[in-house]
Length: 257
Ligand SMILES: NC(=O)c1ccc[n+]([C@@H]2O[C@H](COP(=O)([O-])OP(=O)(O)OC[C@H]3O[C@@H](n4cnc5c(N)ncnc54)[C@H](OP(=O)(O)O)[C@@H]3O)[C@@H](O)[C@H]2O)c1
Image (cartoon, rainbow, N blue to C red; front, top):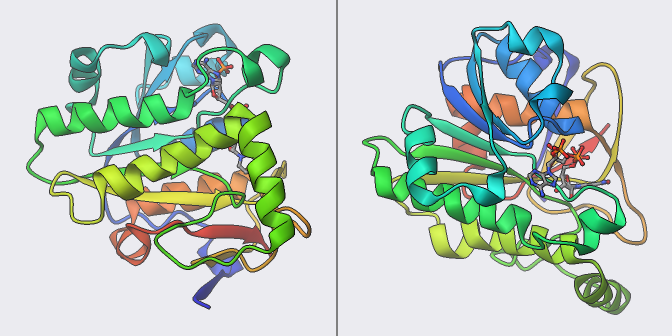
């Protein structure tokens, strides 16, 4: 199994590209950590948020951050095409709020629709160089391009989650859109779907390992991934071409070590 350990000497974001990145879900717990790490690495960021009042004060005054006040579900394709025209990368950390309304209410396909809208807007713009798309996904989703095994118990639980929990199906469909509709040979969009396991909060970036497929059962023996490490890896994917080349078209699983 293909595994990479990210040791302590690589904690700094390895920047060899200067990008303007559109971040969706920037007000969320992981999204904030991604934006901070991109900006600290000297990158420009454009964020779409529905409640700018929730943002850290220092973001509002930071000229590396452009805040767009809008509900992602209400943006039309032409508007998104305009918003994304000056961006070379897109990151999506959207997720359903963990409330009854967030889990079971509309928009049930929050993440899938946002991925689809953004990809269609990129296609419409037809940029000269491919735009990078980094999706925050979950270790609970299998990469169906690979023969990732599933025990009978895992199959049953996955089926139940799909039926009972709309956000799980949304995560699966969002990654499927990139994997199947966008594909690996798209001339204008390249993508990676990052799969953390159980998310935890840590203050500092720590060691983490990257795997082409899960190395443990996300259902019966889940690992831990800190949100700040997810943000760190997503920022590195965006700003470092070697790291991007290694993982594009894949769904890397990330665990704390
Ligand atoms: N929990 C886990 O252990 C786990 C494990 C692996 C993967 N994941 C996945 O990781 C992703 C992000 O996790 P997180 O904890 O960082 O998420 P989070 O803190 O809940 O952030 C979610 C983001 O999505 C936005 N959002 C939610 N509903 C929206 C709507 N209807 N319209 C527009 N924006 C909306 C939120 O905006 P507001 O701030 O305006 O609400 C926020 O920016 C999720 O997709 C989750 O499924 C979770």
